[in-house]
Image (cartoon, rainbow, N blue to C red; front, side):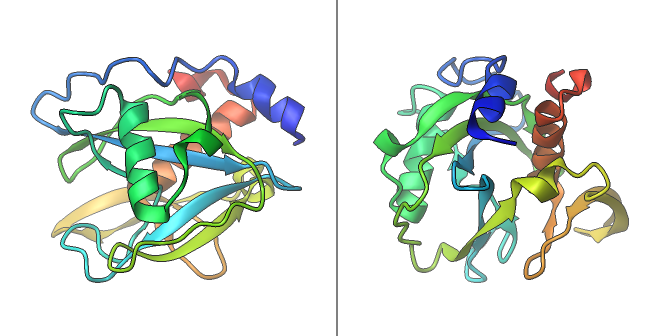
Length: 193
């Protein structure tokens, strides 16, 4: 998929700068879903440090809790990406947001999609980010790539999505958000519902 096709598929997303939804009993969070406009395009992901108290060692998007000072989920996602990767918010072209995703760990995540130019220098924050890597758009667009898996997580039997990657296990909320993004980019109408 080229950049023009990618932008056309993302054009219908709701605005990224709208106020955060009321999370109810859940904790409001936002993540940046960064699409690097390299040739070919790819999704930028991080592996969280093993030293973190929550979600240690898991693959994630840059992001975290929405703070009171954040004007929107986009502001929170950009703030977190700057903190975690030294990503300059001015280098991110926000295109919209995907539907919120509630997690079994008590968060309501707003995924904010942004386009990044290729060749950015990112500086992972030690103690927060163990690795930065890419998932190719070709893998994302392959409808046979994600798999459903069942296993014990947090003492409960759960069913969750897993994406293939040669070095990292991409599962849980990150994988579910990628499933939504993949459906949107393939033109599936249910992807943004």
